[in-house]
Image (cartoon, rainbow, N blue to C red):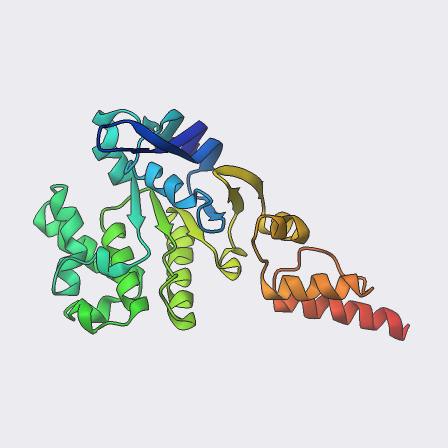
Length: 288
């Protein structure tokens, strides 16, 4: 079953002068079609201005379509009566965790969302404990968020969303402000939520190494979905990705360059282990 379905989705940012006359129209989403199944791990790639963040805001009903349709968990985001339900089905984690953390104690911050939607007090604290366990932050439940690292803050922000028990979590550049250790922690957290709890993950990023474990990738450029497929399918098309101003994982690029130099390597190598295995295969053939 599709938890997210977009049909010919269009969003236009309209700029008006002081008298209300239209000065310019920027098309941020241009006829986007999406079908995302419940429980999938999806990544959306694109350079700045490609439309990926605008798409995220539609999934959370922060924006409404200019044209076309988008359904989240069977509900049309274009209808105001559905907004509350949609935001409970699809939680949102933003780039800067400081913009989501509202309380002075970690456990109170995680409990803020469930309290706002009317969850009984006893259940709130059960959810807080379970959510902090899920993101590996239970031992920090009495800490001040201000004393945490960037990666820890982002995991608290994710716990706050998890505590609302959404079917889907949209993460909009969640690691952009983090160091490599923080990025790895956050990525591991969302992968475990997907595998262990069946939460649909939609990860919006420009870090190619973060998406090699995704079920499916969507590549956006100028508001359109220009490529889609599994990570191996997408990263096999190195030159096409470059034409959309995107890179590939470093290991993939190394294998691609070695292939151009004449080594019998397949396109779309995603990990160091894969590359070593293929180089060993080639070495064995040469010895024979």
